[in-house]
Image (cartoon, rainbow, N blue to C red; front, side, top):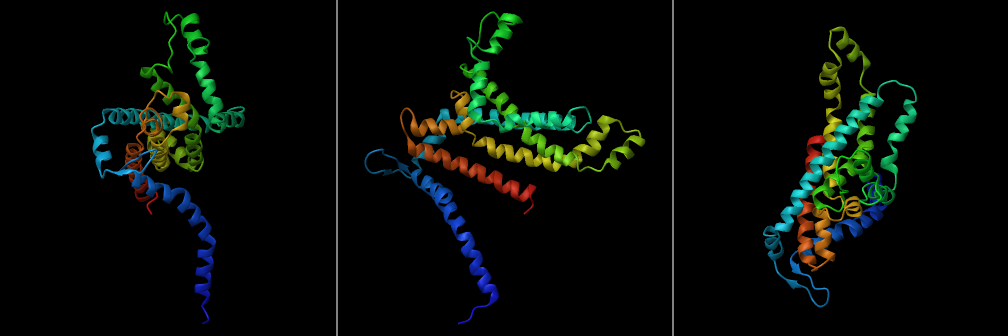
Length: 288
């Protein structure tokens, strides 16, 4: 039986995307489904798993450590998302001006984002080292702001602040890139017309610049929320005592009293929250 051109093209298309579908199914869909499966079991490292139904979720809702890590995650998200957006906006506005060696400055600004995570983490740990760190030397020995040296990363009360500052420093360049690309597309005639009408720099920012870049800012906020909700490597390498949800999940699954069923239930809840953010991003921002 002879097939039509459309059918041949359809078969060709499916044949071309089949390897990608297979990889996605093997590396993404299967782990998600298996994780959901494990969340209903008391996982045994040796022997058969014991089905417990929703018991892991019930224990999770009563776990004060989970709510503590959730609160830490919210603080981390608020500080990092707000910080990277505001700093990225400020730098983009500055780099949009004309001044000598502007291209050199634009290149240097990108270095934190492209630098290897492990190397910059060790650099920050050295800066805040209580014995040989530059921070304590300046604060205690030179400025005499405090009488004793303080281990900012080792102290859980201040480690979160260091992690937030690190994330802002590491990731504001991506915010800067997206914002400045939009700034450079704004028609300069709008600014000239507003200046002729007597609108100052602040007025031009709020009435022209901000409305023009509002879509980019909204996209940045949603994307940073999704990325940082599941952030593990930077937080764990810099300050493992800051227990955000990914860190708490890791400790639950692989450290101390290992409870991989509970960890799986935490991961399922995180997945549902991230899915909600993705759906919101697709519907409200991308408008698909």
